[in-house]
Image (tube, rainbow, N blue to C red; front, side):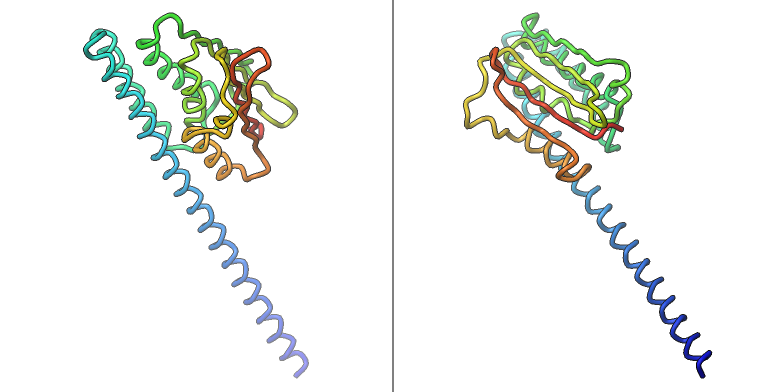
Length: 219
């Protein structure tokens, strides 16, 4: 009897352990699926926002500068193809994200001309770091109208720090909380990395203009 009940208890314990592990696995899979769905929804929110702003810019130029408008339409076509492809993954190398941003800047340059200047300072090691897909475009969008934008990326310990600064007049205090683009980036970063593993802030620079700083886990 002792042997029999020992076998029964061990068998029940094993079955309970296996069921518990299966429940944990199903829960983890469900959480991953929910996170992926949330990321896709956030990306879909971002793309129409960007598209609306770009089409609005093209509409302003159609009658005044038709050649510039035509160039923007061609650039937008290329950018949308690359954006749709980039949206299939959660993270891409920073170099790939910068290449996508360059497409966007070329479109905006048709509107702002030579007064739109972008300086990029990214060391080779940072170019290979993984970042959230479509991270930079919404952060640069608000700085475009100020003319000169500086983008830097550096490694600080186990973190990748990206800074986007402009030389404008800065933002009123009510605007420092962020808009649609900034909120979207913050939500995607939180979904991917968790609340405590990233940081995103916007502030006015003492020398003039505003700066957005993003800190991500180095991957």
